[in-house]
Image (cartoon, rainbow, N blue to C red; front, top):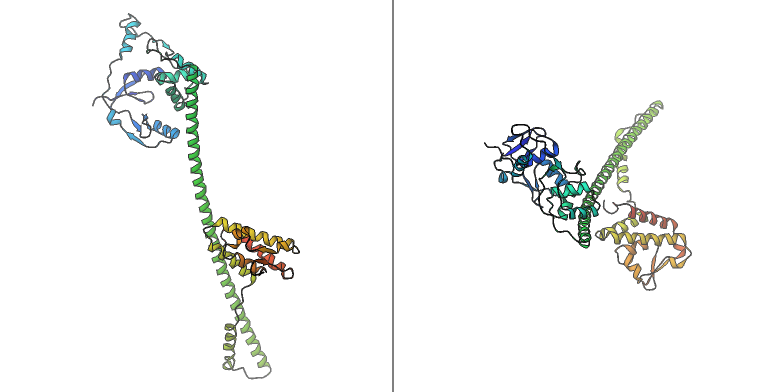
Length: 414
């Protein structure tokens, strides 16, 4: 199979043509080249159509631009390599001398000719002369924008600030028309604006990614906390069951000990042993007494807690509104606790717009205040807490329950 590339024996780089091999030799001083059947990789970015000649170059392009999709067009561009010396090189060899069969004369390396006007514009934009010259040379003196783009893409190259060198008499091409100072300023401003917008877009994208990550971590923490609390509740339930079982066994041991003591005393007194059948009727009485124990009524604190839980459940899609209601109720209770003699803190007009928006319109808000001692008066126009009915313990309990409802994220959920 005919060779399709030239391979550098010193660094392993694949080159498409003799011209590229010569340029590679000029830049690296490598001189060991051989024909190869391995094709030069041609990965084309589907977003910006930039060709990349290696996986390393495509990875670097992805890192700089965020573009990740590439199409392999290696086989579309592969063709047999021509080993004929380029015309320009042949002319240089003809001009170099008459040595005939002797060693070839050393080629003089010079700084390539570039568009002086664009070079001045780049230097005016604060680029070093060597970097500006290198950018113009490798971008083909195409335009100011092309040179700036080349600098951006190769700013991390180790030799970016080294002056490029090419064989003497190899420069060609007329200079492009110069831009006026005003056009240079406008062009520079456009390039800076474009770079700024690109940077802002990248920062926004990174901020969105960070926000998604924060939300994901927050959800995982909440889920872990919920699981931990569930496990803790189960552990407490099991612990209580174990304690009750231990208490039952302890009571049974005590009962057996009492029975043994009674039997021993009867034996010492010379009395006959107690008939076990006679003691049996007393057992059902005890069991019946246990089963008839009254159910403990709910305390006022429990009613308050249940009222707040019902309020949150009834408005579970309006977290901000529920939290504002809890904070308003806490403010009312705090005012009463601090200023029990001030009637203005113990009397609330039910038709007050602020009260209606924050508490009155929410199901359970007025019921909670009534549990705290407030009463409707004057035909239901006011809520009033009489001075002689202020119970500090009830007010403090209300404040405690409200604080728990505000600060506990799982209140009313579990």
